[in-house]
Length: 459
Image (cartoon, rainbow, N blue to C red; front, side):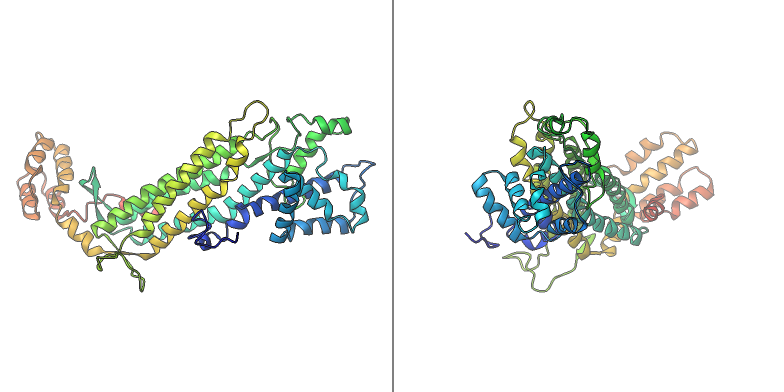
């Protein structure tokens, strides 16, 4: 059956396929097979350099040819491996057989073909391949998409650093802030979350069927297989894998680093859900308008509507991403005894989790690009909320020892509509120094923003 965008079961490969073109080569089954070939080749070449009489160092031509199989691995190659798998009913063995088939016209490689997959269990290839997929997906796709959001938000924080805005705590009017400061809060949170994602070490093991180098030592008992395994795993690509060596495992790498990574991405997504909902609210209040796109329809029946769909799409897809990410982080570190297969099918959904996250990041970035600040609406809201000056007035009253300042302002303002005239009339009757009285009389809701502008410019 040939699949099209409208017949795909998953919207990631259907409706949103075009938006995930960068992720698909990395996190798809094609990407998985590509990494398996990469691991097998790195192990094979490295074995040739161990000094074994039975496996002489490969010639430069052979090395170039093998690395070329990795570099130029194509969808046709992937299909060839799938065809072999139909016979073997084993995906890793199919990769081994495919690689050996590429040796047929090369006597040097053909003579050494049994050193392909030498002493390896399938999980030696799979866990390293998964780590390579995550490395590429994180560094090449997910982090750049997140960085684009952070950069855009930082620019907005600086641009709107001094635009005063009414706060709302518990949904009620509260001490003013600035638009830039509220965005700066998100920038700081996201930057910390982003660094956590980037700092997680991606682990890998190549130590045999139960993690003890049993098969390796049966062949060459005196050879330091643990040091060799570490070298293959930690040597930078393309000759090695550029990962972090995991010295202790059962048949599978424990997946604790995966849980840490997926949790870090989920926490980042939670920050973005928080922000998407806040922006949605600010659009609803009229603080932001959205630039129109020619031909776009907001409602099938209400012609006036311009919906905040990008932020709604982002929120929904972030939720889907987190649902999968949290299952991955809860399930993957658990394996019965030395091995069960429950992780295998679950790991095939890493791309699903990352796909929904990247899709959400793109929606957020698109939505941010459409926003236009409506300073008139923000100023109007501030001017209708003089009650927020009750806080500085009662604080100055406390400074000068006036009786029950909080209680006085509570009685004066609570539940009552406040105007400039009412608030300034209250201030005029206070028994405080004239200079302080003048300072309070000059204060407006728009000027009562503390260090907000300074903090916004700092990020």
